Length: 185
Image (cartoon, rainbow, N blue to C red; front, top):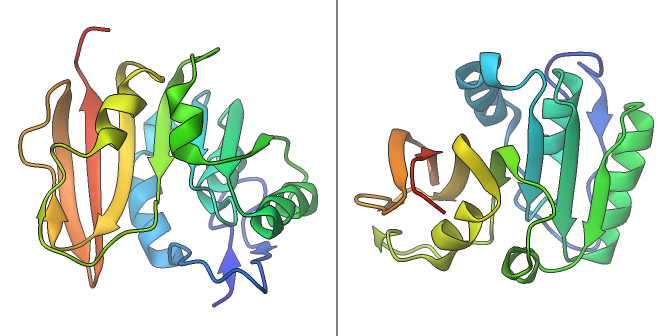
């Protein structure tokens, strides 16, 4: 599947994907839905792209006017793809080679306005309310910041402490949940 930057300064440019580490990159149409929903929040935003893969979320945000993006990815080939994609798009970002959950266990040096997470997911039903990702992301986001979580469609957040559910939609097997941070940290 070929990925491209949808809009902004790098709009239309193709993104490279790892050849030896199969990823499940977010389709262009789903990223279009996400960024249409976030339109006014992206310019000037500080963005964290967790489980970054190709870097498509962070790169799309930078292309649309985000002031910074930090990418966290554990697969070395994917990390190199993110670096190559940033160079190809003439954008700059902070690329971290490491496990996203381990990154979230650290002390945040900065807080982010928008956080994207597209972790590997298990195809099972149930709630995501007790998923450790929700609590860990809370330490890295500003008050009223938005967390966009891609997950399996048959799972959802129903009652998450610290978070207001803004939106939940399914696109085939992909579920998208938009959450606003309302908790006190």
